[in-house]
Every structure is written in structure tokens, then in C-alpha cells.
Image 1 (cartoon, rainbow, N blue to C red):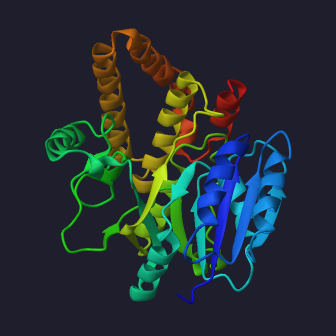
Image 2: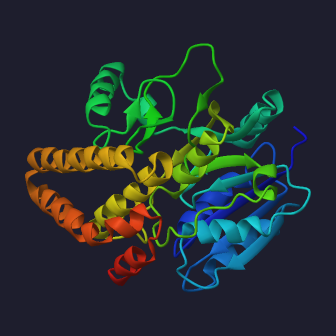
Length: 335
């Protein structure tokens, strides 16, 4: 594999998680050429951790502390992009709470080598839907087809629904190393550097937790004609850290507001976009009621969902016009 990789990891107050992730990065059969840490933490502990790994290898390590702070994940990703060396062929974004299998980079590189038409690749999450027993997959597939907001799963291909649900595969195709995809997961997504040299950047209107920013960026590229792949061989575990998570009421609020934004980007702000958003809200409320019935102690989730929908309504017109600054200000006040 002759491709030169630059890995960008954005982190915030998760030094222990980052240490575990970097351990798997520096344990690869094929090491990256550079590792860039964009840190929005309240201290510089992550810098010390990166220096530890830099001293053990020839990998070029770059540490950047976010400025201004708390600007959000898309801004942090864009900050990292500005630091990639000119010789970089592939830019790989990783979450700070993933553990790569040792052949991960090798497998990602093989797809880029074998499929020159591919602009981006995402690896398979070992604790994903496709690892479930077959009978569970059938049930999940039926639920995902009827209520994708409850189970974001499709049978074979990573797709994006008309209501902007990012759907993950339940089954793997036989005798295949990879399949085509309509979106790439932000926890591990690799792009040819040309994507960014051509001026494409992540949407910095999405701030804070920035829910869905990965799907929005990749699916807009897909709609412009770029092709993506989902690799079966490039495996990783998403540990899903509980550190620095936002409260559930804010999570639901941002899910609704940013979903309206995504639907508008994909389908416009006319009748079609309004229809898809109405379907999404109906499904989300139904999902919250189902979860509340399933977990009696979780009845508050349905109330939070209805309350979040009401709180988003005053901002709907602005969001449909792709002006989300006022909504962001309201959302950030609650953090």
C-alpha cells in the first residue's frame, strides 16, 4: 500500500478514551504518515498522550488546540484538514472512542487502490447491527422499514432515507469485501484528499454536538455524484464513551432541529421537504411512545420529545431557509 494516510481525531475532555484509540492506531500493520489531534478540552492532557506515541514511532504527529473553543465538531474537522501535509492521499477521520483492528488501515487502502472511482470509505463497526443473530436482524429490518427513527437499519446497503435517517446494514453480501454506500459514518470515514483540495468542507453552521454532520457532508457529496464504499474487512469497535455527552433533552432538541436542516438540504424547503419532515416528526413521536411503553421508567422520554418539537417550532422557518444561527444560540444556551 503506497497511499499516504493522515488521520484526524477530534476530541474533548476524553484523554483516557483518546489514549486507547491512539494505541490501536499506532498498532496498525501499516502505520499512517501523520496523526492530527484537534483538542477542545479544558486542559492539555491529550497533548501529552500524543507526545508519548510520537516518541515510539516515525509518524508525524500534530496537536492543535481548538480556537475558538466549543465551536463544534465540523469546525474541528475543518481545522484538522488545514493541517494535513501536502503529500497526503487519504484523510481518515476517527472518533476518539474507537478501537481499530490491526489490518484496518491496510483494508481501507486496498479499497482505494482497487476502486479508483471511490471517493470515500467507511469500515464495519464490530458491535453494529450486522453482528446480531439472523432472527433479530429480521425483526430489526421490519421495524427499520416501518419506523426508521426507532431502528436505523436496512438490509444490505448503508442508505439515507427520505426523512434523512442514516441507515446501517443488517446483512453482509456473500463473497464481497465491500459494498457501495450513500453515506459514511463519522466514527470512521476516509476520503481522498482531493475532496478537500477541491474546496469541500464540513458545515460549520452545525455546532456543539453537531448531530448528523457526518451524514450531511457525505450524502451531499453522494448526491453530487461521488461514490462511497462500506468495507467488510476494515473492522473497528465503537466503544461509545459516556464522557462529555449532552443531556437527553438537548439531544432530542438538536435531533429535531438538525434533521429539519438535513431534510431541507436534501429535498428543498417546498412541499416535498415539508412532507418528509412531517413524516419524520410523526415517526419520532411514535418511537418515543414505544420506548416509553417498553421501559416504564422512561416515560419522560415521550414528554421530552413532544416538548422538544414545540421548542423547535419557532425556528422552523429560519431552518428551512438554511439560517440556523438563532436555533444554535437557543440550543447552546442549554448546554
